[in-house]
Amino acid sequence: MPRSFSVMNEIVIAAAASAVKANLESARLGSRFGRLDLSSKLALLSVEKLAVDFSKFPPSRIGICLAAKMGSLSTDFDYWAGRGQAGGPSPTLFAYTLPSAAIGEIAIRHRLTGPNLCFIGDHQPVLREAAELIRQGAADAMICVSCSALSESAASLLGNSPAAKACAIWLLRGSSGLRVLGENDRDMDSLCDILAGQ
Image (cartoon, one colour):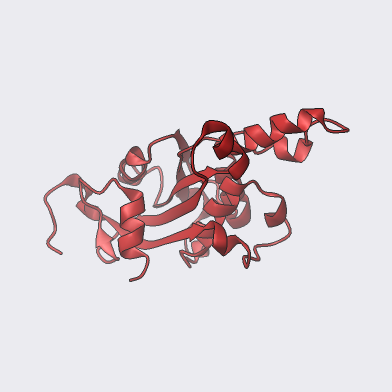
C-alpha cells in the first residue's frame, strides 16, 4: 500500500481482532473474568485476541482508547433492576456502571499505566486520538477498542436489538504492520473485519 503524505503515515496498525458474545463461552481469562459486565468481557477478550506481548513496552508507555457505543447502559439497567432484590443492587455490579470500566479491566490484566481515553457513542475519534497521543510522545503504542454491548433486557426496554461485539486495534509508531494508518481510517469495525483475518 503506498504511503500517503498525511502526518498519520508513521503510525501503523500492527494487529486487529474482534470478539462477539459467542466467543465469551469458551474464554478463560482468569478469576476476575466471570464477574465482569458484558462490555468489559468483550473489550478484554478482543484485546487478548490481538496476541500482543505487551511486556515488550514499558507499562507506562502503553495507552488505551475506548469507544463504548452504548456507554454502560446495560449494566446500569441491571444495577437499577437489582434495587428490588433482597440486599439491594449488587455492589460488584456498581463498579461497571462507568462506561470506562473496560479500560480499567484491560489495564489491570496487563498492568498498563499509560494514558487512557473513553468516548461514549461513536468510535470515529478513537484511532485519530490514539495516533495523536503517540505522535505527541505521550505513549509509544495504543490499544484501541470499540465496544457495542446492549443486553437483551436493556434492548427490549429500548425496543432495539441486542448487541455484543468489540474490536481492538494495536497502534504503534513503525514502518511495518498490517497497514499504515491513513487519514481516513476511522471506522474501527470495518478495519477489524478487514484486518483481523490477516
